[in-house]
Image 1 (cartoon, rainbow, N blue to C red):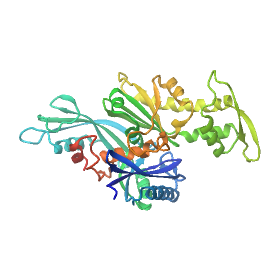
Image 2: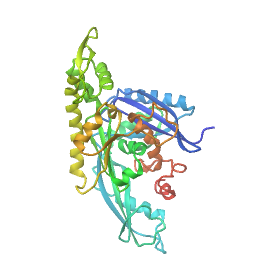
Image 3: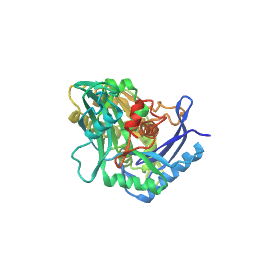
Image 4: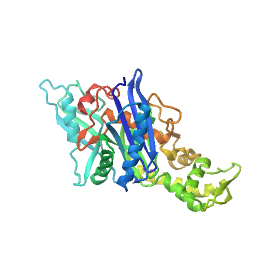
Length: 406
């Protein structure tokens, strides 16, 4: 018999991926995965309800078959230009007579930090405590049990457009699933690929999907800035298709096979490209490919860097950039990112969970795998209610977080 399972659903612009995990002897273990082409989403927004529902049904069915379990609910990844983030602070008086912080105080102070001016068409997706302050002593990770009269919290708040969120949830619901919670994509990817040490020192996670590139900046162990750039890997495929006058499918193949083309000093080679009608081929050099690919990749990185420079304190030290998402598989992408960010760059592969096959240890699965790690740890809210599952998955943030997010 299977232990309690948890599922994640990543509905992307290019593919929809469903992942099922169960508690194994040595922690969480992936027991089922399914994916299907995604035709009803564009840049994180539903453009065709029926196509999106079909994609979800197909991916979930494959994951259920592999896992041998029925999926009734899943943590759902969300992205798009409608996502915004801000940092806020909440303050409450400690309620107990003995002036000892209890989980109820933590819950109240996090709720207090969520009181922000929010337009009627927006809702909070995440309120993530960065650190607590007890009677003026800041940098506290877990205030429960500490003595004090005044409890404060610094929270990173992520909001989304209600209309866009409702349409995603409608597709999930019509595909026969309940949404256990919503998770902003780069937070899920971070859970699967980043080490705690990296989050402490300071790291930029850039998740390059098909339609969007999502940013999460961590420092001091917590997330301090999140955002979305409305450019992803699909625009690069489009550039190659137009530049080499070939089909989108052929452009995608070229992108996966030849990456960013030949670098300076590399020998220039030639390869065959099918013409638009598919009947003949012509020779293209890796140098020609590079002239198409590199400007677009650099532009994407510059857009991301600009957002970070404008929104992250200048005195903040960042140690590295981690690239995830399907776009991170582009051959020769790391030096291009290093050129723009001026920091060491690595490609983030999901490793934080057991049961991964070599196929799954790829950057494009980081979000789907991260959902089963991040979601149950109190990640995503749904219409103001937090995800239902808590116990059994709470190792990371300690016992009191399970009360905070129940």
